[in-house]
Image: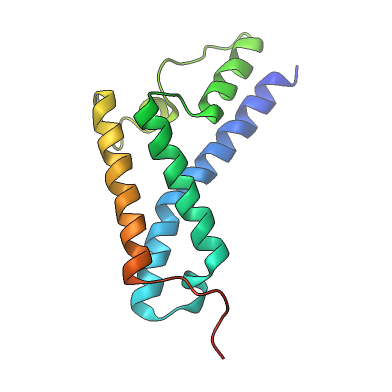
Length: 131
């Protein structure tokens, strides 16, 4: 009874993580160029770097995202169709990587992770806001 709702909740959280990782990078770059102190907040930057590091690491290990696995399990428990592959491959494939093999995602996540790491050099985080 609650499984479909929980599966949808996990999906919503997963979408929020994707938005945080992709949108967060845009915010970091735009904030670095425009001088926004909030884009250099150390806690935000650490959370963002950790998120893309986990995503890229999972991809290198060939592991599915835990959110994908949990959502698929919840949908199976609810007698709904689950899907094969990762969250990105299933829900965003038509938009980002149509019919791409797994190595393409690994490469994309790795390059994105390197760009996030490079942003630390170009727009270093600050531990406190300047006065």
